[in-house]
Length: 309
Image (cartoon, rainbow, N blue to C red):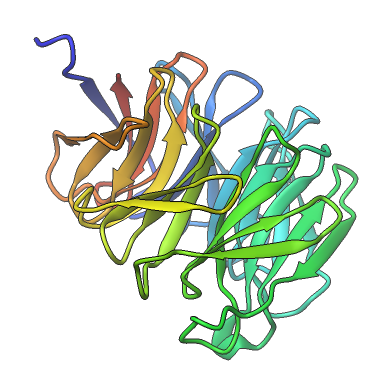
């Protein structure tokens, strides 16, 4: 096998038709993932042993997930209007959002020790989009995000969120064609995605080059934005790139939900695509595990995938 060819392994989730969504490395050395359809949090060991934990609120449709500074794992509930916390042993606590009808999406550990998450305005923009944070004690604060003048909706739809070493957080706006920056004090600045209309900006991560890298799920592009707000886009990267991580090899890795591939992009913009072994996997969430491998969810095949870079 070529040294540049990664090795795939796939692990079937016990619950049928669970629609695994997002995945994150946990503080216990395992990977933790959300199950959109079956309302469970899953845990997979580096050896592929899977355990599932039901979430108390029915029909909550779980979204983002991340490790907290308290040794627990935190997640969002798209329809439950809650932020959830699960211990490594599986004990779950839910914290209701102050604003009704919000849709909390992605979540990340912030530079201030709080968990930061994105919120879209809910059905028919019932509430304006926002960025929220929650302390490990469960105290929630929300900061409204202005509607982009480029948006084709009446409110903002913040989606992905990333923390940076500089102490700010950056987020994507799915319908606004902007990338946002928010300070831990709640000040929001927005930068236009220069060349693209209706980009569907989704995942975002701090790259090894000091820039923020993001996916455009509606255009198939991968973009980068400097901390000064200058945007570069790389065309024809994928058919529907979803989420993105900084890999252990110094590159960025992303899922291509529509193309049945894992993608790798260098910091100079060179893209390589690796088809998953099973057809129609619909890869979505992606994370780097404690084992140095890249793990991802397969919504189409009810599995968790692992790729050795």
